[in-house]
Image 1 (cartoon, rainbow, N blue to C red):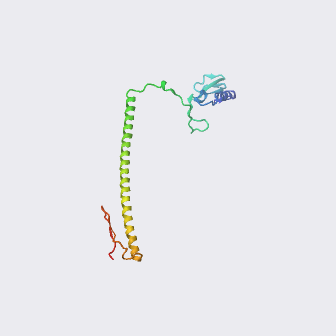
Image 2 (cartoon, rainbow, N blue to C red; image 1 turned 45 degrees about the vertical axis):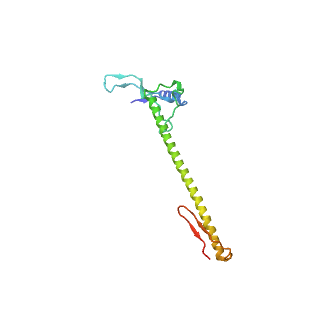
Image 3 (cartoon, one colour; image 1 turned 30 degrees about the horizontal axis):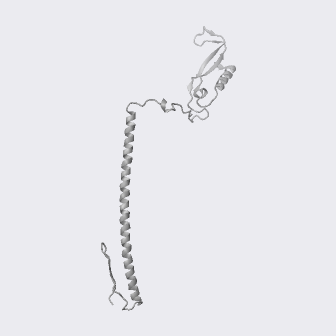
Amino acid sequence: MLLPSRAAQSRAAEKHLSTGQGLVGTGGNLRQPETVKVYGINRYVDAADSRVMHERHAVYRLEQQPAWITRSPRDQNELILGPIVGLRKPEYAPEPLPGETSREILQARRGIQEANEGMKDLRENQEKLTSSVETMAKNTAEAEQKLTTVVSLLNERVKHLEGDTTSSERPQVEATQKGEGDVVVRSPNP
């Protein structure tokens, strides 16, 4: 039966604590060291061959292989994000692959062409909107003029009906608007 010795356990614990958890990107935080346990074995007869006896000795067993640290020791589901490493200066960047630059230029040209088409559509829509606003303003002015004429004629009729004007003062009023939707208003004959 193999039992770990107390001294071996304390040495393994010291070795594990000596690596420590350093800053992200330091050696102690990148690799997990191998774990070796030492077992003190007393004298025993070999189970495979009863003619052989083993004297007291130490057995070293590799418990855990060295490995990369990818998870936080506190929370096994937490990912460790290390520092950003790589080429920072553009002059140290590798040369682009053949065709990569021309592909990027073509993509940029397509983007510019699409933007220009969008601007053209926007200008056309603005011109249509401007012309429709001008037409509406013109129609509104014509409608106001017709309405003013009709209101003035109606005021004349109201005055006539109320009897404010005498028959000698009453003028024959006739208003004619030319164009689409002609309005003709005549005052009644005395």
